[in-house]
Picture 1 (cartoon, rainbow, N blue to C red):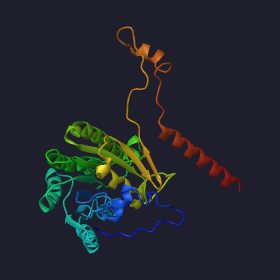
Picture 2 (cartoon, helix red, strand yellow; picture 1 turned 90 degrees about the horizontal axis):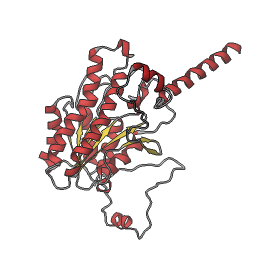
Picture 3 (cartoon, one colour; picture 1 turned 180 degrees about the vertical axis):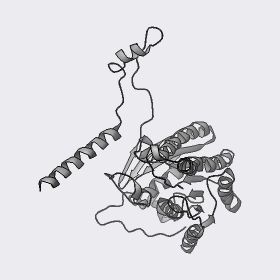
Picture 4 (cartoon, rainbow, N blue to C red; picture 1 turned 90 degrees about the vertical axis):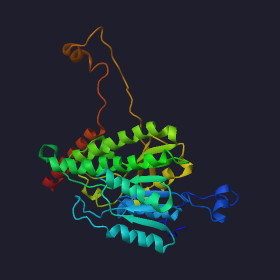
Length: 335
């Protein structure tokens, strides 16, 4: 098993403690503590940030890791495979098993080759974690077609290509498998990243569709919405109230890939620092009926007093930011 030492910050307690006579402690004493022992896991975007943290954590828990990364810049430029190869060398130096794949997730052929790397090397694909992504930040009215297409292609299509390839194998193999997507709280809306938000919203719908369609085959699908210090989070166009590190996100992903999470599917989890939260499932909350067919006039008269609206939290947040900025400016002016 790959060996990795993790130093917990002062004052933080390891919450995965077990009594000496517990089954978990007995497994650890017998050298069988790996959550992912023997599993083959492919991770896209594994060369840095959260992807790197997940790859190292998966290897530390006994997984054989396909490190998929073409090492592009934040906007998707200058591809190179050195980052993937360097991480494989690090995992192997620690006694783990890994293979590097320098394929783009934006084509079906690329997704198939990423999955095939695990199947051909170790005989199966038990988990896929899709983290690869880029940013092209622009207000909606200024966004170019290329800026839209590149982000949606990398994030949303990049999930589809590897999920499609992996699910085709998983549904036929004993034990099924696990698909782990990476979305963002931005799927609820974004100011200057409409392309990114739209892609992340599509990923949530893809996960729920995969969970429903693959449940009968023993394949789970879940999404993680992380908040962590990465080169992508540095470009979020507002202050984040909560912030964690990539290493805070990795344990949740390992859990979702493990047999201990076989009952968990169709979920979206936030992971930030010490917090894990689950998002609600979309459903109708109120309804009103007409006697016959609706008219615009009847809707105008009755909508506000019946079904009304579901207020966007983002709008309230923006209003709070605006007021805070005005108060700060007023205080500075009177100083």
